Length: 247
Image (tube, rainbow, N blue to C red):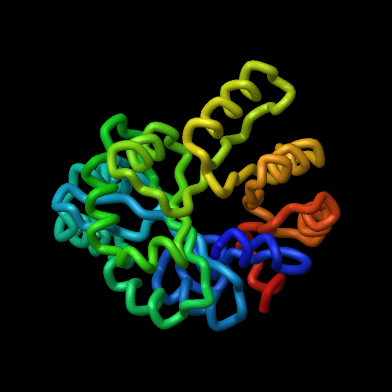
């Protein structure tokens, strides 16, 4: 069970943030493989969908060419490859090509963050659930997003009962309205995991999340002081670009 795998890791669970981005291009399969090779406990990767239903491992929702933004969701994968070639930049990898690596590394947890600002997320959710085998989704994957509506659709339109994570943005947690809103969303979506920015996390937040029997993972922790802060507060896991933490 992913909950126990992460909560029982002493002193903390290490996710390679977009693989090992200080060594290889972030979100590339090479970067992910290197993070696993070096000894991470889990890998975080970003995904989104092209106009022709190809799920790519990529962070930004656009690429820029000659000063113009080209939105990923309006491009076919072949058009995306062409634009990347014109930029002298490698094209994003496809999620489907990562599946054999996931299967081969059954001990690794894969946090799949869906990048979407859309109201209707049926396209990417249906494609993701179609391509990833059910046992992998349940036993090895966390589906996360900043988009609460996307997670709501995943839960209640697709009846998805696998592990999900709410990502809380850079929010001032002294704002009582924001706190109550987040608590309501958490109550509705019932995520096993909550992801909070390192600059926002406090001991009281850690204690409250644990009182709800949920796991707290913190992003993005890259220096020794931040790591020590997380360990002292009892954070369960961190997302890090610094492969030296787990290598």
